[in-house]
Amino acid sequence: MRILFLHKTFPGSFRLLVHAFGTQPENTILFLSETGQKSTRANVRHLRLAPPLKHTSHDPVENDLLLRYRRAARAGNALLLLSRDGYAPDLICASSSASGSLFVRDVFPDAFYAIEADWFYTRGQQTFFNHDIAPAGFAPARIRNLWEYNALGDCDFAFTSSAWQKSHYPDFLSQKLHVIHHGINTAFFSSTPHEAFVDEETRLNLAKVAEIVSFSGPYWDPSRGFSQFLQAVPQILAARPKCHILMLWPDRRSKSRQSGGTAGREETEKHSQLLAGIPLSGKARSRVHLLGVRSLVKYRQMLRASTVHVYLTAPHALSTGFLEAMACGAFVVGSDTAPVKEVLEHGKNGFLCDYMEPDSIAKTVTGVLELAPKLAFIRKEARQIVTQEYNAALQAERLIAPLREGVSKKCGISSG
Image (cartoon, rainbow, N blue to C red):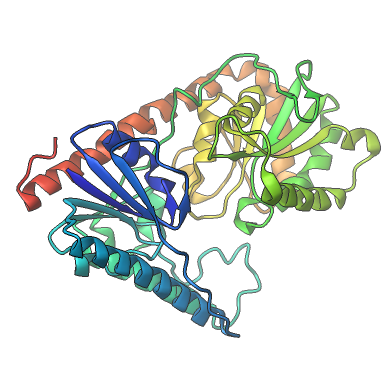
């Protein structure tokens, strides 16, 4: 089967599908993207697209519209060249939000066309953390939704990661959507009792620390609660004198890479500046460890060593970090928001706190730390739901099955 993937980054959110299809020698895969890793499989070919030129205007909506159109035009021209050279895919998988998929159906009308639907913007979404929305703040959302309309209108099959995401699409579009999360590698993200956290790069050794509260989230995304967590840190440290705070974020391109490079250092410096503004005594501040970008292995080590992992998000798409923490056996304190509650049940497989209230975050975390020795069943339940419902291999099969069936029916070929 000839499979074409289209995404801004290789392999991006299609990592598991590329791996699953790529392990079957009868498949040939072509992946078009602007950025990403090199392909290491003989039957997976990666072609780079030139990123679109940015448009400079005083109107940000105009900038976004032209950037998305230019990205789509470059992808469309690449598809035309492939078509003229005789290439004809049986299956096309593209992202709705990456916008390069605008002309897919025009160039390859006979292929089975699958879309990953990201997010449909509706009026009033996320205003609880964005209080400064402009009077015409609906304009960017309307422009972004044009690509959602086009992708879901053209495709043969569409899927999205959560029921929460599906619920925001209009009924005539949501009826096409299947809820299938990408899942995580539960063999890699697994629980190892009593794993210590040691960071060779900074010579940090927390092996003898009784309580570790961890957090992983970018400062620049207001929907991920970095500021709210920082404001809760003084109260957590005051209530738990033996507790240490550990913050790092994973470099998902590598399991072994230790340094985040220039971009990673800049992000660490910005995090440090924000942390400097939090009122802490010198002794308390010594129990806060901001490590920046680390390898996936080091990130997993943090999750395994954590007593509590704090995950905060606005009502938007749920990141894999939430599931990874549950799979690694940490007590997860998550925000009381819709996407989190789709997985986390308070008192059963984790705990909920008020996203906007640092006091609620701190009290929930310290309460869990106090009762941690008696709550081993929570860790077990968290790991169990992730392995049963979000295991990557299982989720890949759940997605591949309808894709194979669709290719077989539309293209009249066996898809293996």
